[in-house]
Amino acid sequence: MGTQGTQESNQQAGAGGTGRRALLGAAVLGATGTVLGLSGTARAADSSRSGTGLKSLPVPTIIGHRGASGYRPEHTFGSYQLALDLGADIVEAGDLVPTRDGHLVCRHEPEIGGTTDVADHPEFAGRKTTKVLDGVSTTGWFTEDFTLAELKTLRAVERIPANRPHNTLYNGRWEIPTFEEVLRWQDEQTRKRGRQVWIYPETKHPTYFRKLGLGLEERVAKLLHKYGKDRKNSPVIVQSFEPSSIQRLNKLVDNPLVVLLSGATSRPWDFVEAGDPRTVADLVTRAGLREIAGYAQGIGPTLDLVIPKDAAGNLTTPTTLVKDAHAVGLVLHPYTMRNENPFLPTSFRKGTDADAYGDSFGAFRTYFATGIDGVFTDNPDTGLLARADFVNG
Image (cartoon, rainbow, N blue to C red; front, side):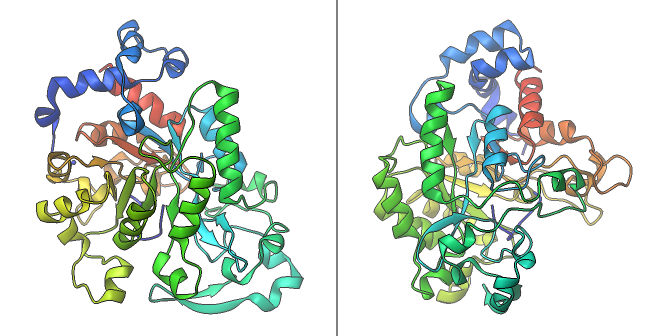
């Protein structure tokens, strides 16, 4: 999930209604039923959840954001593995950026100074530079300036140590995964666990990389095709903040595709480059959503587009986004739920410590009640417990 939005829906209970509640009850995974101690009714309902592809997923779907990044450094196999162990329905593995020699690796951003130990490698000191990334001057080390072999000498570190000091225990333990390694890991985990493992990769800064001769979409499509995962019902959802990237992918693969949406006043970078004056606010109108539905199956809005906040950071009245997106057949997977105080709406915070947990269960419940189809969360176990409370509530 991108930097365009970090935190963060119309009580659609009426629009989704009882039928939706029944679907929600039916959606809880059997494996999780025992762990979470769900009622017999909810467990029995598991088997009634049918369908293929996106329709086979539990609702609300719990998506491990960059793995289980609340507990391990993000975009590492340690984080991805833990997300599955905690019961996540989908693992966001990973944010895809290219190396100089054209391989796709999983990093939150192409700048890796904050997510790896590259600064501790004197042999790479000369690679530190300043670039303009989607209009923003950014200083650091960039994946496109390293070969894959060089990147494999680095190790991942916690991106937000002030909020997650406990995660720094794992600094240096894991290397940077490639997307091809993730696709093989997905198959291996599917066999080991006896259930289909889903992943949710994202193309990062596709316009920027295309200008460098490192187009992402063709590389993603080639790997999906190689592993037989480029079909309508394949367990790989591909997302991007740039609509043109999703439109390009729509011509290359048949996978479910999702357009990510940042703050209402922001503009996707491909719009900026193309001189398209529209903002995200235009994309979430009924006309905008109808257009998206022509080439994608879902949207990934920031939670603030579902329930805006006031100046004090408290939730206000839900928008009509859930109802409007559902009306044109789009699913909604908003981002990002995190347990720590700074990332929660003000009224759900407890105390003032930056790394203390607030009332994330209350926040999950509030967002689930809007009728969203799923949510990205750094804490998949919390999300699963919150879903169990919600479907049995």
